Length: 204
Image (tube, rainbow, N blue to C red; front, side):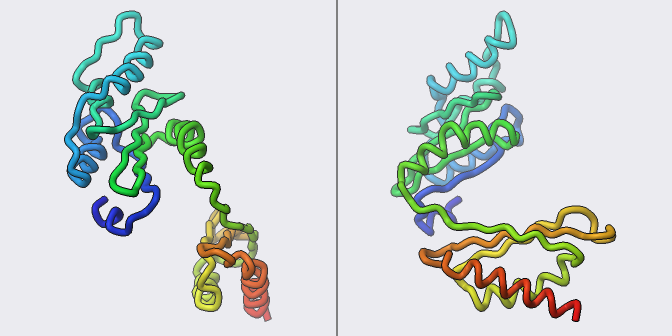
């Protein structure tokens, strides 16, 4: 966390570790990193209470349940539409920190309801992205081509996702290409064409 904050990002997001058990220590770690003590957050406690009231007739706020409402001082809890532990929004200097639960459905729900509206407030231009589906080649054979493409197009990011087994009849790779710098999108089509040309030479 401290290493990431040194880079002074606008937004920093953590995922996981907000639950009631002893191994859920994300907020304790952030508390130390930003030097803000953990405190019981009344708004977060109400969110936790409301959740258990829907599950139990007489819910008890045990120490394990109140742990999910114990946040770094000054935090803002984010409602969790599908689970218990609230998300957390914090501010450290010029960086806005978000902590989301690790359960995928809960993480996605809070991301959609709280983070997307916040990020859209920046009115930033989203990176342009294309997806290329490549069949008949395994990822290790694609890797050197991607290494060369990265050198030729340093403003782009290349990420391959194998789908299925390499030993299958027609292995499939989903390749995503998008820009990481302004105006980098101008090279996306050329980069895709370059990769396809190099792949064609493998079969020659």
